[in-house]
Image 1 (cartoon, chains in turn blue, green):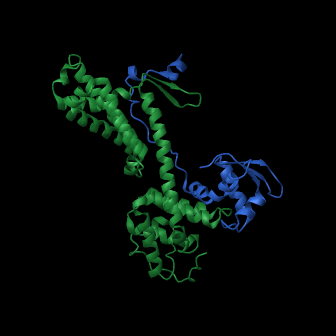
Image 2 (cartoon, one colour):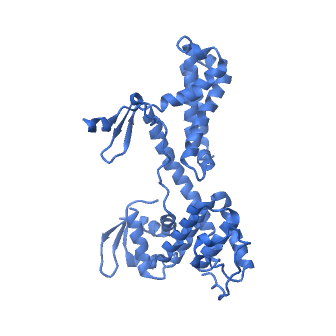
Image 3 (cartoon, helix red, strand yellow):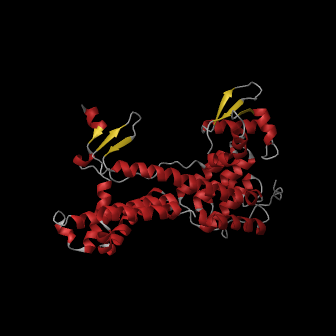
Length: 108
Length: 279
């Protein structure tokens, strides 16, 4: 019974002050994530140009080496990992040498 | 023309109101309708401003923000014309145009924000049942679009100044100069100082984060802290401090809380090797 009252709270009858809205949800990314998104634009663009929108990490790194500074492949994979955490890409196939198959899920 | 949809919406609203209540009624009560519309728009604007506390005016000026205010204004005008259409039902206010405008301007918002019930979803989120659902859905749309617009603005701003941030030196030096510039600009509260230290420590411990991402993150952090209006000024001041100071102020090596709030009052820089040229 208590659950029902909790689930259907008749705010107007109980005199609750729910008319005031909370601040906007924190949709803004953390500075690091914002930076990753901006830095990764060429990565996401390169994937978007493919049909299907997926590439292996080695090919992607080679293709982008002229456009973004890739000094260390581990750093490049870390960026891909962050993009996967933010649901921009999906690592479809893991490879022991790091040549993962990366698929674009959505663009920012 | 960025605001074309908003202009079209305003014209359509005028047509809609004239169609429902007759153009004669709209003309007759034009002054109170404008007043009620302004009150309604103000309520909408204050609601948006309270949701975007870091840059409230920008959110209000964005096309989707303007549209939200227009919808609030339209609801208020509709409320006002209802008062005049049924004067016996609103006897207390219908005879006074000023009072009617105030009642409609703010009253419509109270009605439109009423929740008859709130249903909790399976993941704990609230779903309104009542007129509030209209404005809630609209606010979500506004949030999404205002956020997208502002994110693009922020990206442009930081990308444009990336070379300037790089030119401050390596990550430690860039942080030091920017922090010194920030201290010169404003007195930072303890929370912000702590956050600055946390950010610095966090980035130092990220070996897999490329230098450019760290520079960009630094840019976004300072942009959030000082706002878009002062971002360029803080960066320019950091470059000036670098030009006039032979070595970094090494703020990153000391606890931030111990640093004075004025760059002028900062301790003399420790001798150290000149910073490497920008990459």
